[in-house]
Amino acid sequence: MLVWLLLLQSSLLIQSAAQTFRNASYACNNSPDLCSRSYSNVTYLGAHDSPFLRDESTTFSDSGNQDVNTIAQLDGGVRLLTTQVHNNNGALHLCHTSCSLLDAGSLSAWLTEIRTWLDRNPYDVVTILLVNADNAAASDLDAQFEAAAIKPYAYSPESATAVPYSWPTLNELIGSGTRLLTFVADISPSATAPYLMNEFTFIFENPFSVLSPSNFSCTPERPALVQGQTSAAVQSGRLPLMNHFLNIEQAFGIQVPDIDNITVTNAASGPIGNLGDAATACTAAYGRAPSFVMVDFFEHGSAIATVDRLNGITPVGRVSAPVSITQGISSGAMGHAGRPGSYGLFITSIVTILASSMI
Image 1 (cartoon, one colour):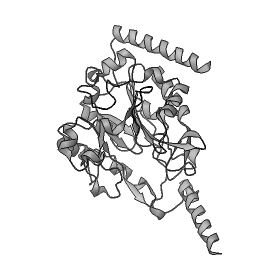
Image 2 (cartoon, helix red, strand yellow; image 1 turned 120 degrees about the vertical axis):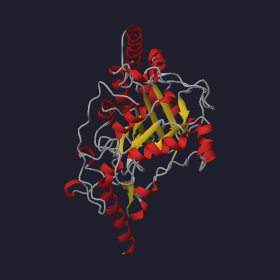
Image 3 (cartoon, helix red, strand yellow; image 1 turned 180 degrees about the vertical axis):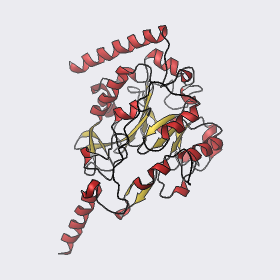
Image 4 (cartoon, one colour; image 1 turned 90 degrees about the horizontal axis):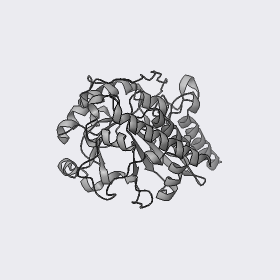
């Protein structure tokens, strides 16, 4: 009963927003200039691993990719939210690599937060990218969207197997109430959940595992069909997703965010590896600005300003996220203020197991 009431409430809010949209001046995604643009002709700032935080709630986990939660990210201008979905004892949870490493709760709870934000912000278009780590069926993912009462917002493409000739404008998405676009890596097309779009049918990505500031590249890496072929990727009509976050590799090959270099990595200009120069390079390589620019700790440096530059806008109505970077220790396994982070606990467990096996 509660789900149906929430669905009814969301439907009424969508209808009300659509009517207001037809009768008032407005800013789409914080700018009137974006309203008439095609979804594919806008650059969206992405929060890499949006729900995985490095803060008190996770004992300053080394695996955290953001300082502030998803709602604060959205308020601050993020419009692409990414996460990993894992099967945790039969329930779909948001887990970083492993649910024993960092578990951010159920997928439906996170979607409910996003739905509540969409309810409050009727002129914003949001994109979700789910990494389907344990190959959940479309029906199982669909049940989570149903439980969150967010399905009325979901956009469904005309074809699940081909890039559209043209994407709707932000105006059209807002007017129809379908302001949530969901991509999944990977998933088979589903007639019962057509809004769950297979990522690599519609998007191509540059390399995402980068350990040196000098190794950022615009060359497509995924999907395999266009790997290493920039021209083919662009001509396919897929939307360019530009990954721009730096990792460090620790014991057992585990990669965690490089906190020490975050202000350079997210900078508008400056030393090698900065975001602004990378965005300019990828714009030149693709003959267009990237559709998505994905970063860690988005509020540090100039990530949102770089995306505004790519869009050519001066934003309105945006709330700045508090800058609260944790005291990352790149070379150790300790979290903030010397407390063990989740990586440190993980390493401790591994060492204990190895030691036990030697007794």
